[in-house]
Image: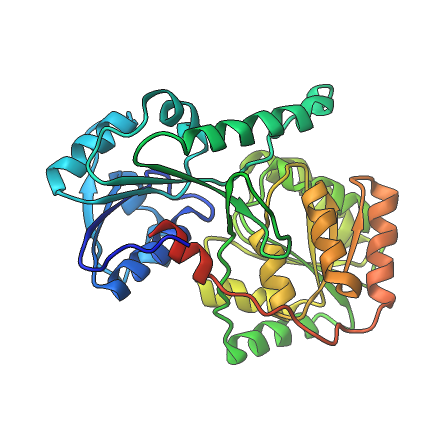
Length: 357
């Protein structure tokens, strides 16, 4: 990986506080400080006032630059970078800056490093048959953007799946913050609901995470408990509310830990369930899968081909199914019968830190 001399000024740009984004920012700020670099964050007042900011960056007191308007663009970043005298500007989620970087390059001082979080293009039926072609085209554009002077464009990959050129791949950063005491407390709460097999669904739960399908697959299984840890999109919440009621009336148990949670609470919840369930319509690496694998949890994965590759790499620890109620139900029952995994994946975030800073 490319090395950056210490003692520099670095600007990290992230206006959106949702999902994994501020976790990435936190990792980059910590890495800069460990190198003796001075790091700034260009963001919005809305991001700083968010609960996610308090979870990831609230105790760090980073140096913050507030963008005065709503437009976040490469020319604007170049101006801020020049004003601050930075020699490295980092965009840790830059998929929508791919074409501007390709067309205009970087006009600011030093180097611009960008990360494509979704190198595989998402497409819904009937356009899904075009996904491989569009994904190939996007990867070609990422490769081409790297030819611009001062630009280094990376693409995120699952730590479980090695990827080779011609583009620069970097592993999705995963760090576990489990507390044995917190894991025990959560597990005690689950066990208080009787002898059940506990499934867990985690993270920011949007329609692409198929909570409705999951509920339909477990409606008639009274020995199952479902732990949902994270924020649920309002549209998803209203859609699954009747299914929640049916699941509970059929004898199932449901526990919700609304997000955002602290890293310790979130990771401990993953480690406390019997099986982590991830059913994605979109392609791309999943930090939840990696955390669960590193925690020694059994996994049921469904949908995305990227999850199918993860399941293949994890071997007996994971089962994959299509996004189909009957197939998902069979996969869950197979997980219930399987013994507890005997090993856990050992993963870190050093590659991500080194590449982008």
